[in-house]
Image (cartoon, rainbow, N blue to C red; front, top):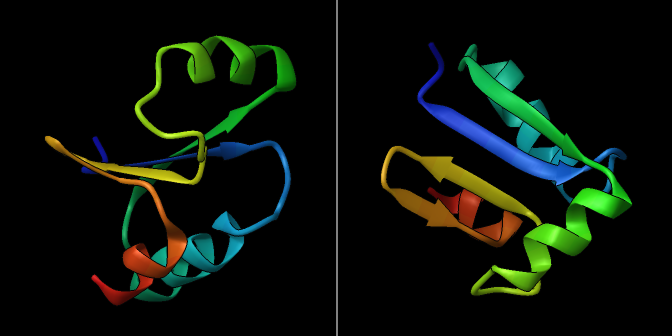
Length: 70
């Protein structure tokens, strides 16, 4: 079971760099692709208006530049 979960829209967008980095490093992760309808539900209960989110066990990272630097 992967330790990471990448949550983003069902498109390339900003999460694509993170996907490339995971692939290059050989890191297993769960790639969750969100539809527009799902985003409306997530947005209502989210602390951030950004969907570019990486979940690492108990830590949620919301911005791709932060993920790249980690």
